[in-house]
Image (tube, rainbow, N blue to C red; front, side, top):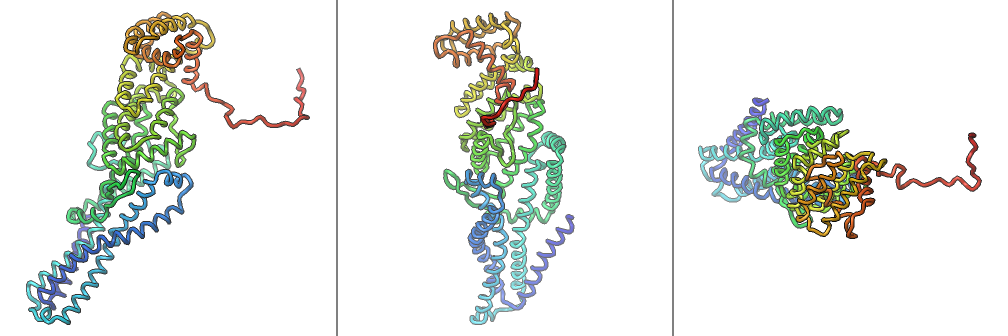
Length: 536
């Protein structure tokens, strides 16, 4: 395909250059120079005019698109004004280069008529030497300039499409070889879903086509020459909550595609429970790279807030349900959604790395497995220092600090589940719980820092005495959580502590849900209804 496209572009440039050179034989070099000036004036006039016309057309396109949206998407657009404004501006900027080309041709023709009239009315313009080398050369330059200017939008579109598709499918040179291999593997795994697989096959096929066209030497040269003009035509501002946001199709659209691509390729990595440190670093770097775009960061923050609100209400977002992380992590997920519902761009830049690293670490520890080994999770959470590390990360981020409570509650749920049914159905652990209550009451009036070392030894010993090996970190955190929730009255009683563990065990196993549901109503069977006698 290279030679066909290259030959076509070269033929177009040579054809226009040759025709204008031949046409210039009839004019003096001054007229030929004036025609080059007409080209320059046409370019300068066409850019602002093209944006004005594109604004009107963009509003029409947005109105047309709005009529085809479903109710969920309309709610999203209403709740996230930046999304609606973005679509309107993107539609405007996408058509701006086409309108520029049309206006450039029209304005140039009109100005050419003006020159023709001047030649008829101003003798000095028609008395010069014709068919001179200067007039023919300037005429050829004029034709080449016209060809190049009219080719700039086409080559710009090709490059933009290729860059966006490469970002979406992560096949560009911006990622290293190991990332590309892992991305390809993720795509194969994700393609097990037929609908998603078909979509991905189409995306990769389109990327291959745009990549082949964009790599054509003449397209590359034209993109290099015309990039400043194309970027100027496709740049604007989008109204956000806090003012106007600079936006460029050539920079921000690939960033958005990159974020969507990482969302697709991270699904398998998040759920396979085998995240390596390199995987975590790559995901973190990818997220930060995406958020380096002001527009994407603002749009992501507003969108995440809207999605969180929708999921908190128990609804689906565009038919996408809230992530099901299982009963053990569900309270943490609910708390995270409440925090994320208040996001803004500045917070998001700080939060995204922390949240991603916590989810990835919990996934690597096995919390997202279908039937996790809770005793192993308890040891891993404490012995590896993971719990302490996660809490420190949250404490350094003021916005996410409320998740500390849920992480401590997670440690209580894990230990309670490990204790098992004996906790609820027998009194085997009653002496241990009584001892735990005594130990907690001894340090109730101390500060958290003062009682930390005491709790670490005494509480852990109480568990070990009854055959439960609770790591130090978990012993400290579950004690702090119990003191916070039960110690308000100045005493932690044995019965309160036992019920506390039982409730957390039920919560961790998903046994606290109302099976019947809040909407269930007992049917009115009437006053005459009698229970039938079905015998002994």
